[in-house]
Image (tube, rainbow, N blue to C red; front, side, top):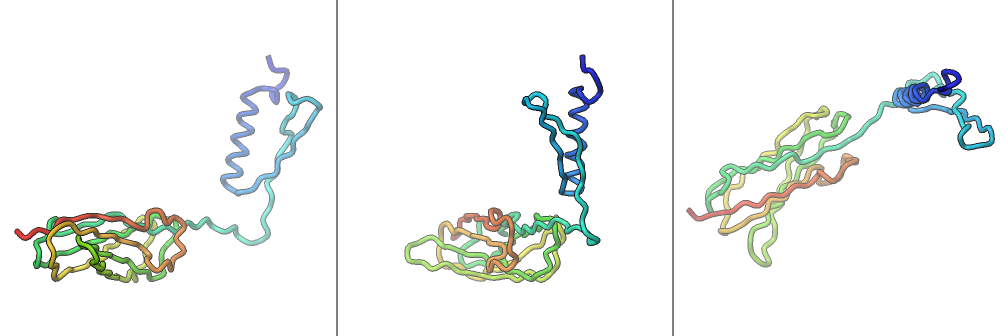
Length: 179
């Protein structure tokens, strides 16, 4: 049985949880350890939160724009008929995106030595965290039947300094048919 409150495992858990809460709120904590010669007697004897100067601490900012999905209407376009590509872009970070940026759609038709068509759409609206916008591309003519790959890229000119580029690109393959 513990001799006093501070020797109790429950007390140690409460102290550790209090430290975690302080670190989560302030981002800084200083601990004082006391070593009495053996590893069993190392104990936390106190803690103090470091103080900031008179200024407010910086708020965490995580900028992340990403491609949410690619929609094609109609899903299997006919050769020679117009169709629409809609690229849904989302602010997946924790700060407003208020700098204009480009969304790119690269159309890669089936065939050898065929150059891709690259289309750009500029997003000028402010995107708050969690908000989405849609880049719409209307494609007038396609001359070749078969698969076509669409590669969508958010912030294609790397203007935003996105902190999570892993979701900046998405692709979809559609089939162009003659009937």
